[in-house]
Length: 505
Image 1 (cartoon, helix red, strand yellow):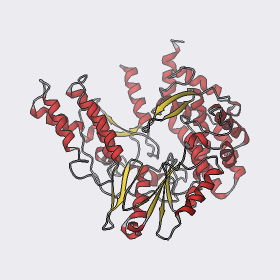
Image 2: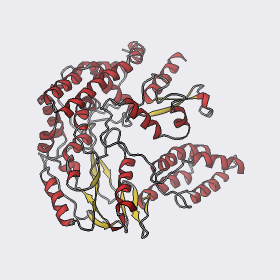
Image 3: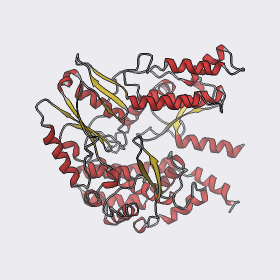
Image 4: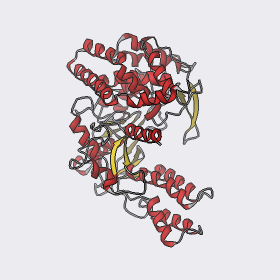
């Protein structure tokens, strides 16, 4: 078995992943089109083809074992990773996905801000692979039916899309100063979703429905045997979106997963609208949290997705990081800066991705002033760095600049995705160009039409929504940031490049 490992590694690297992705996307595009045309029989036949497709199975295995951020998470069997031989073995286990029997879920308590606990139910690696394969077949079918103003856990739609829609509803041209906002909170949304509501709305062959139903039953709590969609599953967010789809049609609103805000004009009856929402949720086994659901004048401001939105007395719309989001971020930064376990160099390496991520998330907010520009915390970091004997004044300034990378912000300048667009509509050029515009700095300059033309430098394929993009240093020197030494490639392509380098070393 040990002797076969290098062979398995080489075989896995040499698989035609580009061809696999094209094969899968071709079927997904046809499913999307068939749903749009109302041909349900054709949809189910195409979904069966995906579930039988070797390309789809291998892509699901790679997604779960190599690309996902939680790839090292173990289930009840304790297995955290698979070698190349084991990955090929799973391919044979997926011969008939209709007869798949899910294993028990590993329940992990996750503490919440309010002191309560959220139960994370984690499937095994093999079950996650099966769920990923099912998702490949389900997602394009339901993307064709989802409302344009739902954004959470949807390919090609982000929190920034929701942020910009809030701006459209509350800006001065829309009379935002006179509007009220319902901050809707659904009580234990994932734990209370009715299985019946999910199954009746699913667009899938009966065999797949049965498999999904068994997966739902594997994650239920004894006191609610007919409810619950386990948090931690690959297709759980998709199933939640399926159950909640249509709630946006009740009134002007924006939904991100189970977070939702509704916009009320002066003449709107808030109680009547809330009653409609309650009736909708009751049919699906859910209910509103009366404690957390609030009706707030837009001029008072409200929090949504880590942002604080407010219409000023002059009618001007403002968006800033919420107080909770800012405090959580500062706490993380201070813990690193004040830690005695790391030197200045290590602190810099740890701080940079955290700061860059926070600034990128809020780059369409109002970020001027000393508070959100992080002036005070940067000065604190410089003082701490100077205490290290090997770091002089000039060196500390350089480290602080690296630890707090600058990200340009442009208030309310995000461009929304077109309402009728979907990654499965076949318009690859639109999505590749759109993805390129979502980046800045070195990545944006390399992705342009004059250089890489929105394509991966390794495989030559267009960058599609949901794909992680990496900057690759050609000479292996991560301190060499010259344009000629950099290229933008897929995360998976990046991994394979380094795997090849290791195999030749």
